[in-house]
Structures are given as C-alpha cells and as structure tokens.
Length: 211
Image 1 (cartoon, rainbow, N blue to C red):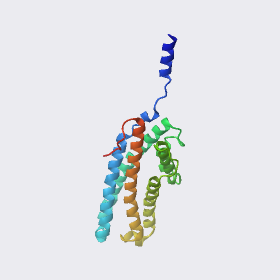
Image 2 (cartoon, rainbow, N blue to C red):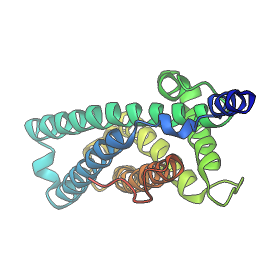
Image 3 (cartoon, rainbow, N blue to C red):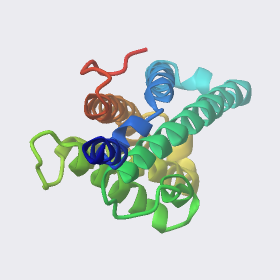
Image 4 (cartoon, rainbow, N blue to C red):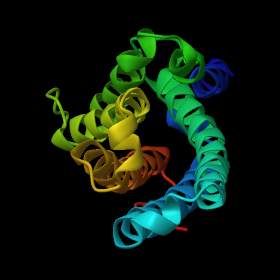
C-alpha cells in the first residue's frame, strides 16, 4: 500500500514541461505571412519609387502608398506582438527569464527603452532555446534589430530634409528602403527559428512554422 502511495505521490510531483504552454504556432504563421506581405509591399514601393519618382511624388500616390504601409504595419505589428509575448511566456514557464513576459509587449512603446529591451528579450529567448546551449550573441538576431532600428530612424531624417523627402533617389531614401526590405527578411528568419526551437522543446515536431 505504501508503495502505491509513493508511486502516486511521485507521479503527482513530476515537473511539468513549461514549453508545453507554448501557444504561439498559429500567431507565428500569421506573423510570417504578414511579414512576407510587407516584404513584397516594400519591394514594390521601393522599386516603383526609383523607377517612377515623378509619379510617386504626386499627393494621391503618396497617400495611397502611406496608407498601404500603415495598414500592413498595423497587422504585422499586432501579429508579431501576440507571437512574441506567447513565445516569451512559454520561455518564462520553462526557464528563468531575465524579464517578466509582459515586457515583451509594452517595452516596444516606451521611448528609449524600446531601443534595447525588445532585443534583450529576443536574445534571452534565443539563448534559452539554443539546442547547442550557446550563450553568445546571434549575428542574425543582431542584424534584425539593427535593421529594424535603422528602418524606424530613416523616416525622421527624411522628414527633416525637404530635399531628401522630395528626391526618391536620395541616399537616405535608398538606405531606408533597403533597411525595410532586409529587416523584413531577417524578421521572418528570426520568427521561424525561434518558433521551430520552441516547438521542438515542446515536443510538437521540428518543422519551422510556414505560411
């Protein structure tokens, strides 16, 4: 009888797999799809502005281009935040994370903090899910964040320079366009990699999320 009680007690006290709490597979697919759409949009707009600078200089063309970019940015942003939070929440349930999971969302909206904390959270997840147990900085993760920050900063430089804002072939515009495109590619790779790692730890398979 005592052996039965010991077995029951032992089974009840077995630790649960914190990675099993991960519910970000679907948000990851939506995020990748939204990022792919944004990538295609950035390429079309960037190439179109270079080839037909005069046409894109018209007020109506600029308005539609801006509205399209804002709509895609909103959809992608919401999808990414949902996935980012759920991924870090699962990481926190399985490992001792450096920050509380809620910071994966609101840190993006706090000035100055949003330049470092989201990257720190992503790097924390990257280290915690690395199958090799590496503790260094990922070149892919660093490239994604630098490109993302560069893409956010360039519009401010364009806004302060009337000449650059009106010249679609200005160096600032070119850097902004290339940064947006490269940032989208890097973001897709980051989401795919982290989602695949967490799902592997969860025991749900090794295939990365695809749209």
